[in-house]
Every structure is written in structure tokens, then in C-alpha cells.
Length: 203
Image (cartoon, rainbow, N blue to C red):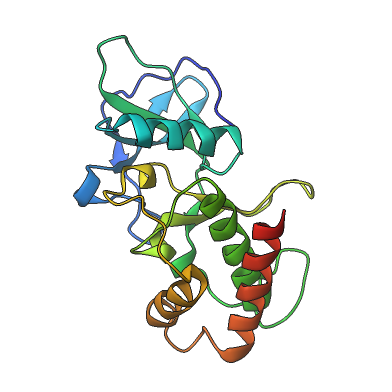
């Protein structure tokens, strides 16, 4: 899941990714689509590279820490478009259905909110506070190896205009999650979120 080199230019999109899985975001010009490739259909995220020096450093650190979804693809010298190749089945966590019964591939709300807390805590170390659409800017990737994470930050979030970390971010995140995950961010879910968040900050 770390940045990799490859031979995958952002060709003309063959079709857009289904809405339930899409990470498209008009506010930063992020597109989510599939292209044809000799290896089969490949899913791409593309967006204009308008990053400031501070945002560029943040992107590099997110890639270095294996926190960004997918692999960064090479571009031409004058190309101002950022392209990531991402897993075909990756989806925003906001659309993830709660798994009520444990199983090999279940991902219940206790684990989900713990992992969301852990991811948000890790990126906070790098100076990133996600002040909007948490559920659409964190991606869930299932069927990873046992030693790999399931949640990643969606590329493009480094273009957040305000990179100032507020006071008491945990409480503000809890408010955001309560609004975005209506009815699911219960007191128990909040406890798991806080555990994951604080564990990440102590690392």
C-alpha cells in the first residue's frame, strides 16, 4: 500500500467508480475512475497538484508512514496532476455497514471506530487535522494481510486549506463522528475511538 513506481499513465477514464465506492470530491478536483490496462481494469484517483510546500511535505510524510491509500504513480516533469492507483474495492468508511456477528471478514463498529481513532491520531502527529467529511476521507480496504492496516487516508486530503491543529482535537472529532455516523457513534463506540486515538498519540 506504499507509494510505488509503475507504468500507468492516467488514460481517458473508461467509467466512473460507483457512488457508494467513490472518493470523488469536486472541492479539490479529485476524480475516481477506472482505466484499461494490460493487467486489466485499474482504478485511479487523480487531482490537480496545487499543494503548497507545507502540503507537499505533508503528502510525502503520509506516504512515508503508509497512511495514504494506494500507490503514487509517476508523472511527467510538467504534469500538475497527482495520480494514485488504488484498490478496486476500497470504499469510504461512511458507507461501511456494521457487522453484528463476528467472522473472518467482519468489521464491527468497535473495531471500526478504534481504527478510525488510530488513523486520526497518527496523522495528527504529522500536523493534519481533518476538519470535514471524516467518513469520506478515510478508506476501508478489506482482505488485507494480517499485518497490514485496513484504514487509510484518501489522497488529496493534504490539500486541506487549514493545517492548524485545534485545541482538544479528540472532542472535536467525537462531535464530527457523531454527526456523520448518526446513531452509530454510541457511547461505546466513542470509548473505542478514544482508545485508538490516544494509543496512536502515545506511540
